Image (cartoon, rainbow, N blue to C red; front, side):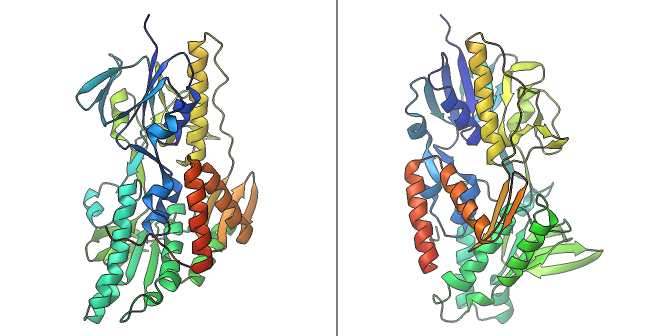
Length: 414
C-alpha cells in the first residue's frame, strides 16, 4: 500500500515545527535542507559580533528529529520543483511527494544591486555571521597597524545599512564591543573612538514599532555612540565606503566595513510553483496556507504572504512557528479523514528588539515596555525558543559571563 509522503523543504522554524508535529502521524516525512543544522536566526547578530559561537545557536537537524521514527532527513539542495509530477529535484535525485511543504525562507536582497554583496555582507546564515565577524574584527587589526590617519579612520568607521531590529541590534552590539570588550586589547588605537553609523531610508528607526519605542531606541543608541542617519537612501556601496542621498544631497562615507541589514527576498524555489509572487518574492497563500489551486502544496514561514488586517505578517519566528503547527494540523486531518481545521489565524504575541545592555523595546499584546524590563523579557523569550536544551544552558552561561565581565569569548577571525 502506498505510504503518504510529506516532503518538507527547509529546516527553519516552520519546517521543523511541521516535521515535529507530524512525528508519529500515518505518513512518511522527508525533511530536506542544504545545511545539517537548524539555526536560531534571531541570535545570528550575536555570532556576528563575537558574543556567541555558531554552535551555541545551532542544533543538528537529525538530532532534533531523532525521536520521530517516521521522519527522515536528507542533506542536499532542492534545485527545482515539478508541481505537475509532484516531485522535487534534490541534487540529481527526484523525490516524489503527496504533500509538499515549502519553507525555504528568504535571502538577502540588494534591490537590484547584487554587486554590493561583496562589500556589504548580509545576515541570514551562520556563514554570513562568521564572515561579518571576520570583517569587524579584522578592521580593528588593520587600524592598529595603519600609518595613514585617514585610512585608519576608514577602518574604524562601521556603516550598518538598515534600521530595523537586525540593524539596531548590530549597532548596539558593535557599540558595546568598541566601548567595553576591546577597550584594553590594542596599543595604538582606541576602539572607543570608532564611528558606528546606522543608515536607513525611512524617517525613523524600528518602523515596525510605535514612534515612542523608536525614539527610545534612538536615544539609547546615541548614548552608546551610534549615529543614526535616517532619510538616507544608499546609492552605491564599494570597498571604500557608501554613497548616500538625503533631501537631494549626496554624501560619501569612507568605510572599510559595511554591513547590510536592509532587505530580503524569497527563495527562488517559489518561482517553480506557477503562481504570481509579490514584490518580495513571497507566495500568496490560501486561508489554509496552501497554494491556490494546489491544495497539496503548503508554503510557510518567510516565503508565504499571509495577511493580517490587510498587512502581510512579518518574517520573524512566531508567524513561522504558528504556521508550521497549523499546516501539520491540516495535513493530519486529511490523513485521518477528519474535517479540516478552521482557517489559519495568527496570534500576535508582539515584537522585541534589544539595543544593548539593560536596553530593549517590547510590544507584547499591546503592552509596550522599554528599558531593563523589556531587556529581561527579550532574554527570556530568546532563551526559551532555542530548539535544543543544551543550547539554552550554554547560551545562558555565556550571557551570564558576558554580563559580569563585559567579555565576548567568540572573537575569532576565521
